[in-house]
Image 1 (cartoon, protein in one colour):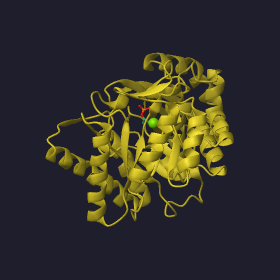
Image 2 (spheres, protein in one colour; image 1 turned 60 degrees about the horizontal axis):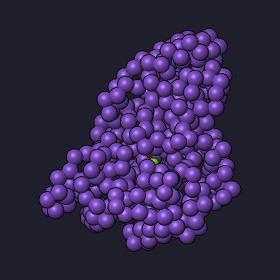
Image 3 (spheres, protein in one colour; image 1 turned 60 degrees about the vertical axis):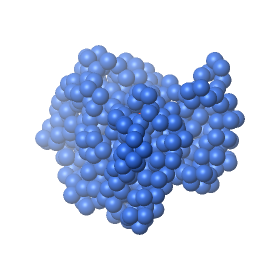
Image 4 (cartoon, helix red, strand yellow; image 1 turned 180 degrees about the vertical axis):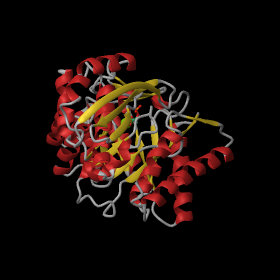
Length: 403
Ligand SMILES: C=C(OP(=O)(O)O)C(=O)O
Ligand SMILES: [Mg+2]
């Protein structure tokens, strides 16, 4: 029923104004799915390879499309993704591009769901995945810098975490309130701020001042709404790490790995952080393990560039106790099947899954369904801006069974 009849690929714009790959998958029974690849700026060294979109499209047309059309059922995601791997033939999708692979993988999942007449989260998560049962808490980027904005904070993302919200909709609106509260506080302090790539405020303030501002903004909104709002970070520490000197550079301040662990542990306690992503360099399993040992009972230590949604890197992390959660970005690994494998391995070993957008995004909503399908604890998908609200509004619809 879901036999693939055609796969079309084109270039469309992403939120940074760069071209990216969009795929349409059509089945013989008329099922249709469309999806677009996102794109990172602070990409991990071990991610699958994104090719220039024109090249990725040409190579996927030559190698992948002929293997899919008339041979593979869109409803069988494992077969779709196995065909993509076979067409590529490398470990890192460097032949057809992880951008083509992930767009086709996600578009096929939507075509499969369309034929079945099921919402995507249910097609991916199974009929017993009840959207009423639990919901991912949206992590909202409210202040940021790093690779996402010039002349702003060294830490890449300050993330509002409305952990006490009674519903996903209230959590989404709370993050927007925190974003607005940050604007008010910046205004009071006479600090002008543009927005970074993900829609977070990108003021030219020190990291210490950003902590004060976000702490105050989350407290204000917590008091106004009456439920718990904590905050967290994506340090994106690989971008701060100078491997030759063996230090993390925050402007003129340098920290050794041991000092970085100490600094992160102090921040967790001072600000009661709910979440700390990539606190150390992507090769520093030991530093991650030290920090997880020290504060992992009271916060999530999450591996993004450390794990790159890759089961081999995750297995090592599990063996070494390097984190207690994993960031899941389908384009880091190239297919939904690989992303699911990473979630399953993590959850079987007691790690939380956090499904995430990229800094370059489109209006695609697949990750909202992926987060619900996998029962992820958190979803990181920004706070404002059309490509971010597309996912947040889809979460609200899923909760209302309006998809
Ligand atoms: C979303 C992120 O940024 P990018 O997409 O630039 O890697 C991140 O680092 O978690
Ligand atoms: Mg990250």
